Length: 197
Image (cartoon, rainbow, N blue to C red; front, side, top):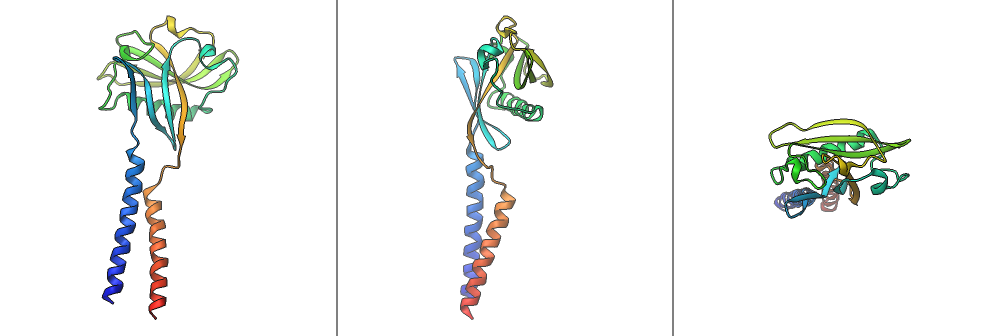
């Protein structure tokens, strides 16, 4: 009986260690600020839903950056808004509370609009926009449109977010993994008990 109990404890500990290690692997991926001197060029490793992206801030005309017919990375308003919110979290993290002037393409001291496109409609790109303000101010979100011929480099307070998929992954859900491991443990223990009889 004591051998059976010790085996249960060992298997439970193994399942717990596996669960914790999978959780730590998924949380080990960190968002990295990409800079040139003091200018923030963008971020690598930014997670939106279950996909990891690299994003760069680029000014200029939409059609010159992305092409006049290329579809944006995000294809729905809701996914673009989630990307914009993830970008806001990265910009305001303890690691990097960036003021607008330090962002590539923005020269304004107080404000920078960051546009994430999600649909082309005629001669406009529909965008989810983050209004990044000075430290201590609340950043705002909205949706709108930017002309594909509008030159953001002339404005000084607006840039496009150029997103690219870094890697796609299924982000593990710890409770599902624990449930799965409990089932495996139960099957293993049932087999052991049947073998003992």
